[in-house]
Length: 470
Image 1 (cartoon, rainbow, N blue to C red):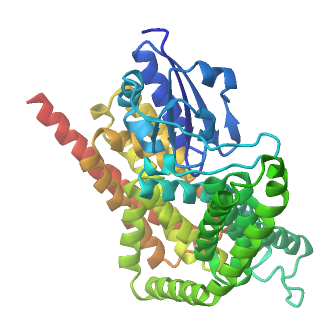
Image 2: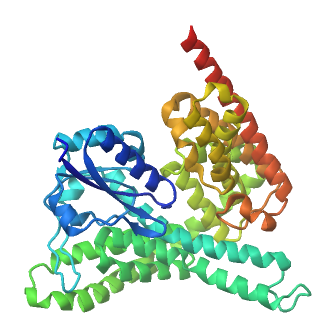
């Protein structure tokens, strides 16, 4: 049994915390079971601990714990256990046992031409995978590649405001040439948000041939004013247009594989996708504007309800799909010039790890040494907008911990909206305080929600300890 060999790949949309937490959980579970494992991570800095072709060939089982494309086609002919990255964190031991028991579906990769990079697609894997999870996986592959553009662009634009809100306007007394340059560079990065989102959704569906088609489709969506919703739709259209084309052109002689990759797929794919997106631009633009206006009006008319919704979404799964829905909406509104909504999202994302930190600080004797250490580290993680630090606490007692985190995050978000805070950067936590409007009030809002949540969480823990003692 000790010679049983497992290889794994992990990846989360942001590539910051979940990716490595799943890696650590799988490695620990394998070690406890006396098994060998190598885990490849697909983080924001790229692929680390990469699996070699020889290691994959010699593996007895494969675990893919990812919410993004990790090139699973490499595992052709292997039994693959394909789950979300959160399952990799929470159920690592069960996944290792499933691998030993030979569970998972047989990976049937499409026929690929190694020279051209083209791929003939089939639906065998898709039919064995939950459709909702498959859509989410494609979407999050786009989001994970989009985020660095949004963050880098948003921070540079935010920094340019240090010279004044009109520092990039040559006609204004606040004009500063360096600030204007920063804003221009940041604006260019932010402008790539929709094309990159679209391109990597398509790439997740159709591999390399989908990339260029998705990018062009995203440009059409962006220029048509359809926003990130148009980018999502163009990405899926582009990906599945290539899938359909690959099936239609499957009968062509193999000698024409190179022609398909370099000519037929891009030309036909861009033509069809572009035409469809031009036709959809007007209705999509109307929907996009209506959604943005609705959120903006809701933000002004009832900040308490909006803060409650944003707080609950952000803390419910801490980096999962519901959290990402709030975050992506915030970044989309930020690109539209609305920095109020993002302020509440950021506050709600910062609060959960701080809540665990304050709980450990106030009620340390009811926590173990490892939990205390994690709680104190969470002060750093929370301050830099890494919500996932709270996951280990939530995983141990989800029915009581998660609602408490949602309460604290909601308080932080509600106060942020009531204080009219503006956060022009989509990430960074307290590091972006110099460019936050009403920054002191923002810190007060977050600390208020975190301290209340931390005290409530500590009381819950104290009660649990009292029950156990009896």
